[in-house]
Length: 34
Image (tube, rainbow, N blue to C red; front, side, top):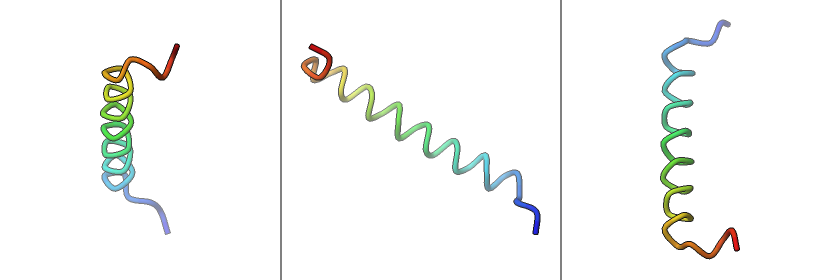
C-alpha cells in the first residue's frame, strides 16, 4: 500500500502548527530559555 500524499501533508501541517503554537507559547512565558 502506498501512502497518500495528502494524508502525509495533512499530518505534517497539523504537527507543524502544533509545534509552532507550542514554541510561541513558550516564548511568551519567557522563562524557559534562561
